[in-house]
Amino acid sequence: MKTIGTAVIPMLAALALPAAAQTYPEKTVRLIVPFAPAGGTDIMARSLAQRMTESTGRQFVVENRAGGNAIIGTEAVAKAAPDGYTLLFTTNIFTINPWLFPDAPFNVERDFAPVSLAGSTPNLLAVHPSIPVKTVKQLVALARSQPGKLTIAAAGRGTPSHLAAELLRQSGNIDLLVVHYKGTGASLNDVVGGQVAMSFGTLAGLAPLVKAGRLRALAVSSGKRSAALPDVPAVGETLPGFEVITWYGLFAPAGTPGSAITRLHAEIVKALASPDMKQRLASQGFQPEGNTPEQFVEIIRRDLARWQKVIATANIRGE
Image 1 (tube, rainbow, N blue to C red):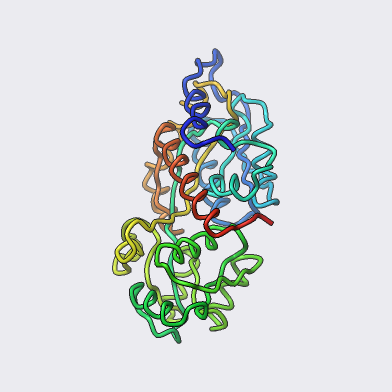
Image 2 (image 1 turned 90 degrees about the horizontal axis):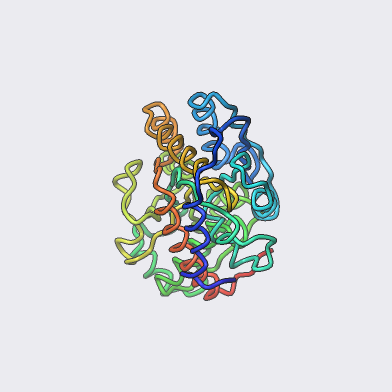
């Protein structure tokens, strides 16, 4: 893969392409979601598609193309006509996959034009109530006293929960035993059942279990505390520099006219600013974003560098 720094130049250059002559959009726009229906990405994509349809008078239709750790759907957009009518709505798996699957049939830096970061959500680090820790500091101390014995669940190799677990191991200089599952449901069931000590998971998935007393919240993975759980500290308060969020963003194929990128960005910002959209996303644990394409490029560049280091240090390989 190209080195970070020079490789993002094509992404930035794509933002400066001349405006197309026609008024965009003139027909139905497809939003490819590279995951199965009903997940967080699908929920946010459909919410945005509905508002953008109402605003533009053109249909924005979500199409789920799951499989291959999001590679199948992502490839479909990379190879689509760069006319603004086939878009990708995905997560930060976009910046993880290049290091897990270096032979993927596309290059995330060369083949896509970032439009906007639409939203984000921190993960929550939660433990089974039987684990005698209430803070990250206590967790680190316990793990150091029992190297390799404390278990942490991951929803599959290379998933955000797995990488958050690896970053916790590296940041805390602790030896945790990562237990891999094929999906979030199975991993969460074993943490709730006490077969595994802890896991990172979405706020929407874990917060109800914490409130019910079935899990104990230790910390959120964002750089600062979450408004949804203001009494729960951030991991970074104990382990400086620790930050893992799941973000959701919109991309077009590289070469898409600048006029289309500009219109799409404006429509996303407008949709995210509406009170009902804010309320809808907040109820799912999402924080609306709506940054500029240039700002989105910087986030992508930062994440690529971070996950390259974490994945190389942990020697993780894609499945």
